[in-house]
Length: 559
Image (tube, one colour):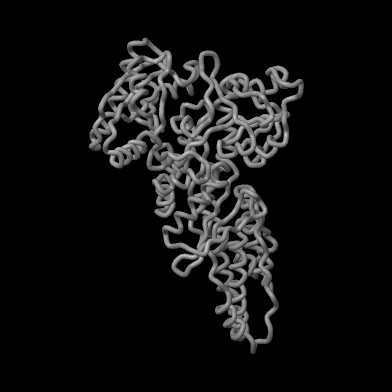
């Protein structure tokens, strides 16, 4: 059943503007003509769009609702004058009942970018009106209410976010979980019941850059990213969302390593970041140039929206002034990329550690004088591995309480156990045996022979004694670890980069270790010894900022 607008001359231009705004800002397809001619369709579209918080859209919807109300009032007066009120009222009752039924169908299809059209069957005789209304009220379930929306990284969104969501909601007494997949492989919704009501959470995993774009446009409540927000993004979003670089808004939920993978039948074992840059830029294009078979190198890479690609570009390509070769095949999914490499003996690609699957990961060095390091859970936990990275959730300062509760759950001990179960690297502390090193100081090797190293490093900015956001939360994890292992004694070892005089760097390394000691002492945790090794035992190349950043660290040992 359709009902044309009586004041179409005034309202149709507004509906056309709404159609254009939806397409330009949100990539949502709606029909102005259909909204003009079909009241049920119009009502469902306006109901769905009202869930999007964006100033321009909200203002336009408010104007439309006002005009529609004025038009409805005028229609009501005209109907009264013609003594048609009983019949009109019956029709409206029927329409409301059917709109309710159509609304439930609509909300369960809302993850798709195009707005669907609700079917409106013809009304039967007026005598059957009460039966229709009663059936609609009895049989039609209430529409699922949108709780919050997560948008962004595919690495976070493919496995980790679904596991965290379901566990968090179960903790909130939710049940009856049902994942609803849309036509896009990276868009879905989790439907569930809580206190007798149907609710849902929207999950879109198109890549890290979409996290900040959708937070800004009001299309997301929580951003997922496999890279840290850039300084430019922080400044751009600060007036609207608050400072997303602050510890209250930035949540490191997991660690991951960018594994460079080749087919298991490939003889290559290790490679430098410089050679990787040459390979993925196309400068080195045959395996024979690396001592292998005289075959072309097949390149597989993640897509431009991916934080995985952003990280590889930053740590490998940009570092050597290279650009990705146009011959590289691009993938939105890490799983698909990994499967392709496993089927091609002459392929090479990069993915998250969780997606190595049937392939072989290469040890990575940062050039001459740098030892190749394999991506393992421990080397990624300590961030000693050259291509390690952090995975993030971002919540605006004014985010809802449930969004903040979810982010807090993700970094809790329970959330971190789920991180491990999904194949990523948790921040829960592990203990690793360390062996003496031939060129290390005697005191270092003495600790190695009797102690063990913990799977965390405290890191600092250049010339700064302020811990980063991960370090601030790692302090709490270390306190809990020591409370559970009261017989162990702590040793802190400070290291620096190689910028500046050797003596100054040794002093700076000691100051940073002492800064960690003060923080632990203030929390009731005693430290047995504090050592400074300055520039010694670098884990990365000091010729790059990323390498120097990893060398500026405080290692934590237990005896």
